[in-house]
Amino acid sequence: MRHFFAVAMILALFVVPGRTETPEEWAALGARVHGGYGAFIPLGIKIGLDARQRLKAGPRELSVLYFDNPKAPCARFADGIAIATTASPGQRSLIMAPEKAPDAAAAVIVIRPRKAGTGVKYTIPMASLPKLAAINKGQPDPIARHEAVMAMDGLFEVTAVD
Image (cartoon, rainbow, N blue to C red; front, side, top):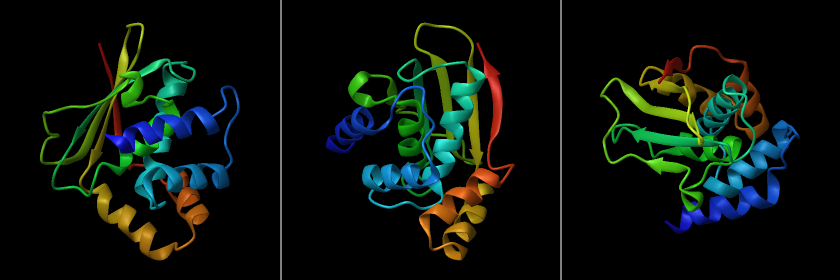
């Protein structure tokens, strides 16, 4: 739980509303929040930014419900989503669901406006994990990892939810 409070503190210090962070800033923030910056963190950032765009939401305007799969590595995607959306457990806007993601999914993430409305569901298929592992292996530099993930399509599926 201390980890999530640390995330909230870092978000408050580094993510400035109305400004887009550079790849270097994302990598530094992700490494500080998670302790490293592998390809899973930028995928979470990519999902969080996509949700903000689709839902036309600013910082602290989204609620995240994260379903983890114990067969996937730790919930690193959640850290990236948290820093991109500024949702946090401390604000009760990022919740780790007690139910698990389906076997075919590394994670399922439902992101909605905090004040109600249609949201989006992101599914990261288990098939994305080898692609992310290849990025980590082939790109030792965090900035290169970030850019590789941001340039790659097909790492997640997105659908609207009521």
